[in-house]
Image 1 (cartoon, helix red, strand yellow):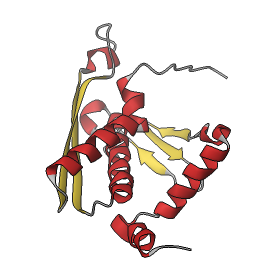
Image 2 (spheres, rainbow, N blue to C red; image 1 turned 30 degrees about the vertical axis):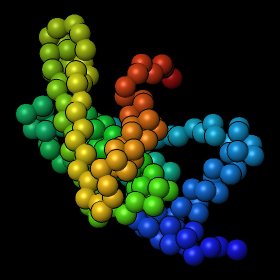
Image 3 (tube, rainbow, N blue to C red; image 1 turned 180 degrees about the horizontal axis):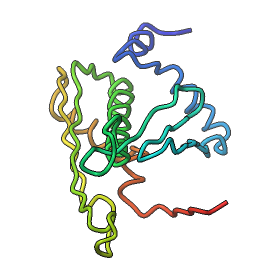
Image 4 (cartoon, helix red, strand yellow; image 1 turned 180 degrees about the vertical axis):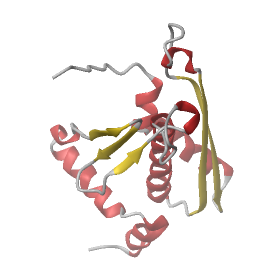
Length: 176
């Protein structure tokens, strides 16, 4: 039987906390279910344009700005990467706030980073990726400062994309 508190919490922040709770219970019962594999397929469309397909969702485009030789019809890969980080953090805030009973009135995450194009363009050896990334989280809520700080700490500690970007991830790129 669902208690009034559970029903109210399930509606908080428009998060289906019941689905998350069911997943938690399933993984507790069978920890092997926590190991998952995610996939994407990318097709080159000519120039610097690509189309990415993920599960059954409509494919989405990638391009480069005109200054980098593209046609600027879509975000480029490094923009999508920081967008993925922001989305992952936002999902973490929504889920963890809901579990903690915190109503979020507004949430915005601004992300920026420095990237030097010399290595990408073959002009110098070094890091072709971001040198630094900074995310600034803006939360509007009636929760007190301590609850928001605890929420923030929990999200940072559990973000899959944040963790992937903050440590070396083994990467194998093979030619078929």
